[in-house]
Amino acid sequence: MAERIVAAVADHIVSPLGFTSADNFAAVREGRSELRRYEGKWGLPEPFVAALMDRAAVLEACEHEGIRGLFTYFEKMAILSIAKALQACDVDITSGRTLLILSTTKGNVDLLRENAEGVPPEREKLGEAAKAIAAYFGNPNQPVVVSNACISGATAQIEAARLIAMGCYDSVVVCGVDVQSPFIVSGFQSLKALSAQPCRPFDEDRTGINLGDAAATIIYKGVKAEDLSVGTWYYAKGAMRNDAFHISAPSYEGEGAYRALQSILQDEDREEIAFVNAHGTGTLFNDEMESVAIDRAGLAHLPVNSLKGYIGHTMGAAGIFETILSMRAVDDGIVLGTRGYEHSGVSRQLNIRPDHSATKRKAFVKLLSGFGGCNAAILFKKK
Image 1 (cartoon, rainbow, N blue to C red):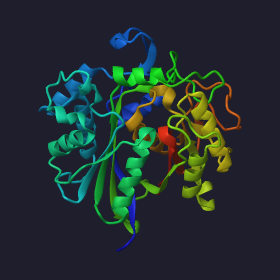
Image 2 (image 1 turned 30 degrees about the vertical axis):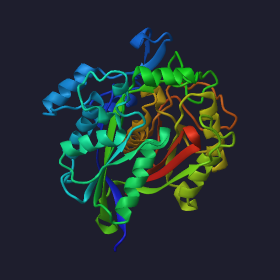
Image 3 (image 1 turned 180 degrees about the vertical axis):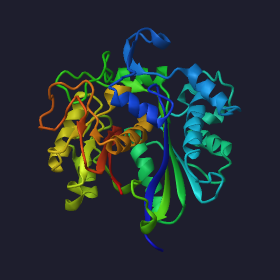
Image 4 (image 1 turned 90 degrees about the horizontal axis):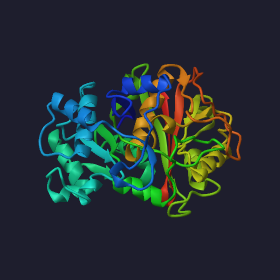
């Protein structure tokens, strides 16, 4: 079998920043953030900052697209993003050679609290929600669900690339989606991980993360190397490494993240990389760990950024959402700034800037880390 390149042929984002990938990128390009402070939201006793969708606007968009049926709000977010991405390419979602991968950390978890949407109770299970989404599009395959903490979006893309490279499928639709709820917010509050102010990744005054709603989709297709068009983004290499350091705290030495970075980089790749798009949650431990891992991997001289200051942590959507924005940034010839960053608060000297900067390079690294010691890194290149 001839080598196949895993090319990104379409993408789409639904978030508080906008209802298209272009709208989301334009908002970040302008420096706009949708993080807002909520007090008394959902009856929670502590205030929190998050980027939450206007649900009425999402449901109106779904109605406009003809998305009807017995689906939860979470499922409709995914369906809307997938449907819009499919409109931008020639991938046949009804083909047995096309797979759906759903990346999510919480899925329909809010159904456990109150099933106000009237869907069958089994849709509380991630696999059942994924089946409902796949069935909407008439996809005949058993969908794959990736729920691997904060690295879910990266893990899903790595799995998609492996399946295409092995010839199992011609195309894979990767959708990441999570919707915030009292269960999720109170869970992070119990860990003392949330900030009551807009997050400040890598800054000396950072106090924690913010959360956000989003659905983001990338459609990958296997193409022959000679058929890859100039200007097309493709998945070059990805790796997952678990250092099993702690159930919720990252390794002090960034062992898993370092090993993931080490696995995807060859010497020649380093000259092509425009930036490292870090996880950059704004917590004391994550940002410090990432700084150590990036430095150990010999990448500290490259621009490093975090996008959490614009939209917060979108959990299962983060790896896909941030990949799309990073692709568009390189297309635009810029490295997006890290909103909220002023003075370094990590032990290693990283090249982080609050404002956007220019670049002529055509590749980037996406780095993610999560609970349980999981870490993932992906190298993306543009022909």
